[in-house]
Amino acid sequence: MAATDPLEDSERENATAPPAAAGHPYLGFAIRAAAGVALIAFLIRRAGGRTIVSLLMRERPAYFVAATALFIAGQTMSAYRWQLLAAIVGLRGRFRRFLAYYFIGVFTNLFLPGLVGGDAARAIYLGREHDRIGHAVASTVADRMVGLIALFWLAATAVWALNGGILPASVTRPVMLLGLAGFAAYLVAPLIARAEHLMPHRLARPMGLVTPYLHRPAALIVPLALSLLLQISLVIGQYILALGLGLSIPLYIMVLCLPIANAFATIPVTIGGLGLREGAFTVLFGMAGVSRVDAVALGLLWFASASLGGLAGIIPFLITPVLRPSRDAGKAGG
Image (tube, rainbow, N blue to C red):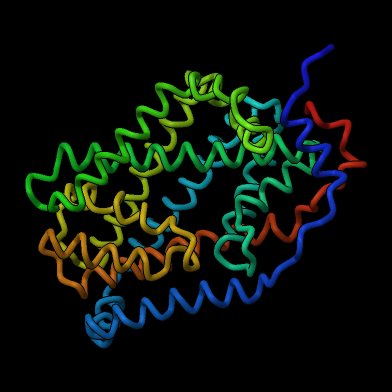
């Protein structure tokens, strides 16, 4: 008897399963937006609202445009990373397709209500195109995990190389542990994949989504390198914004603090990490001697820059249809 593919089994079951409850996407969006606004209002009140506004008005437009362009370039590189990861599970296609779907995800994450997020949106677009939702979900999960692992590695490396007593052990120790845990997980990935057969069926099924990546850690080297390059580009973009504000924050302080702050901003509590990032900025940059006003202003400016960059996704969102599986089943290997 031929062996079955857990991804294909999952897709067949999803095709016959009843639809999940729709939930209350607008309520979820409102809660996340309100939480972000409340955090920002609290931080601005503590830092001094008028001072922050006057500081933001000092940003030089050319620096803001450069940072936004760098953000868009980073998302374009991320789309290529996703294309490489999707190919591991047999989803191949033109880069322009992956680019369109990726920016749709960025746009969805920032501007549309819903709890599914941009990752689910681009998985739906890619999965419907190839009639392989399970494989598309696997590629987006792998894309997210590779990005987080690279972020943890960069944060841990920066703490090890640049800290020099700036950040206390209560901050640096967890960062180092996360970086080491991510590196250990990468090394033992094939062993983790073998444990799939020892798991209960309900755990083995979702595990089967990611085992193609665990079996081939060497194939993740280029995506991980691209993720590290992306994180460095985000640091440079925020450094450019700081220069535009006239702030004299050394680059090594930015490299030390920003990866840790960006890790906090990935927690899906607010829209685009609004409030979480600025709060992390005030704590981390404050330990490095940066004023609370400067830290909050820089965080708000980066949120504005990333949001403007995310608006680029409105074009593919409006012109790219969600393909029906019946129309495109024949493109599964395309």
